[in-house]
Length: 266
Image (cartoon, rainbow, N blue to C red):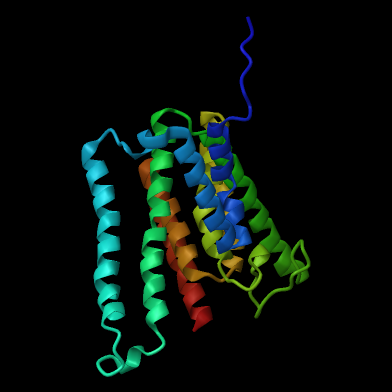
């Protein structure tokens, strides 16, 4: 007897919202905030009060204590400045009362990340998290940004016709020079996703090939810190895979690359 699986479920909706987080980062902060809020609402509707229970009590106490600490620090810092808002004692605060009220509101709005963590925790706990779907989404968008960076450098415009800004490619991020950080963070998802699909004999070759695949657009973004983190991430992968004969050579490559980069910047 065939069992019909429901495609449109709350769990699938949460997985879909999590999978489009890489796209939200490209669109902007507003899209990210809306996406996170939707994930939180969907998670609360799905797991209800069970959402706030963590199996390991020590982790539950630590995570709740951390967010409680952030809120208390914000209240202690800002409430006295609002209550004692007297021009004679605090002349430099005139016109800034709304600023401190906004700080208090933002501290409570920061709780959305606590709920986001709890939602992901429940997805993993109940084996509801579609990891392959998330990896595939990250892989697609980071590859799109990487290809767009190369196109923008070669032709002077990206796929949507946006030109290079101040001699630096920005891809889909328009006026923000954050393409390097985006590639550095999500390229590892693409690398792990592809390596997991190939046979064991070809894993090392694919690993090195994909490393240089993202190294080139990352180098073109002229973002030094993401490039540094990317290189050290790959070095850590080599150490974990016990490829000690490649570690020395790779360390020398890193040294000469950064020597050339910093000499060029200077």
